[in-house]
Image: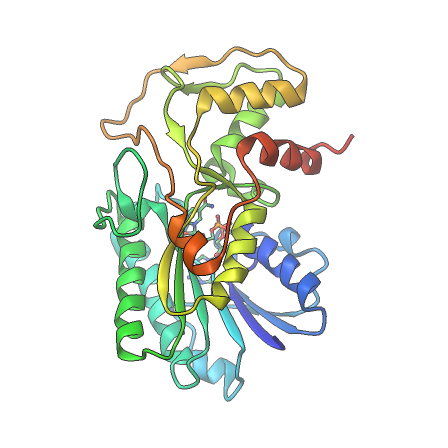
Length: 307
Ligand SMILES: NC(=O)c1ccc[n+]([C@@H]2O[C@H](COP(=O)([O-])OP(=O)(O)OC[C@H]3O[C@@H](n4cnc5c(N)ncnc54)[C@H](O)[C@@H]3O)[C@@H](O)[C@H]2O)c1
């Protein structure tokens, strides 16, 4: 790959992706498009490529890039704060950004890998399979369902064009601190425990999440370019781990013995259990996650507090 476009490259996952692209394709020209609404330039320390400061949903893509042809487009840009409830903003910026990107990519059928979300499954329990019907519980999730619908529609109309969606589950890892309250629960619990405070979780800490390490997310995002056809895949660790278990792992690696402080859950609807069925990723992409929280958390802590 010689010419690569990454939207949302100043963000958590996007910057990890850019870093890995620079390692794997040292000669490639990498262009990042980001408007910094939730990203941070510090995530791009060591970035050697070009940076376009623009909102993907308002950018005139053809005027910006003229006749430039990209070998691949990775679309990570999105409003990621799920507490932004303005339906116009969430839907417009997320959906129209993707529509414009697809319009730009269509003439050359540039391969596209885009970030969907496990939020498309809504409030459910058990193992989530890609064939499950969408059930968005908020406007953020609705916008991601629309990305999947747009992708499927384009894939139907252009069978030779590869457009691959990845439904990321709960991603954690280096370069997420700028997300503050929207950063992963693993990072929030780490901050509390590092400060010597008891970690606060909803009673009684037995809600389970599929926490997926960003190194696996980046690896799968890159592998998705080799998908045999357009498709949508879960991107998780394939395992569900409770908040109590996360706290136990953190205690073990921080050398602390902090008991969880259980607080009442104010939400009427709160997912009891998320877990990605990774069999489609295994079968179609040959992808198996390398990390579980038991191995990913210590790797992450090494980058947060180098000893
Ligand atoms: N982190 C997770 O657990 C998770 C889970 C499911 C899906 N996702 C998806 O993965 C992608 C990356 O998320 P992240 O965790 O890195 O979040 P992030 O907020 O760190 O990164 C998003 C980046 O996109 C940029 N951006 C947002 N809207 C934009 C726009 N209209 N034009 C240009 N730039 C824009 C932001 O400035 C930011 O740099 C997003 O699409 C998100 O919805 C993330």
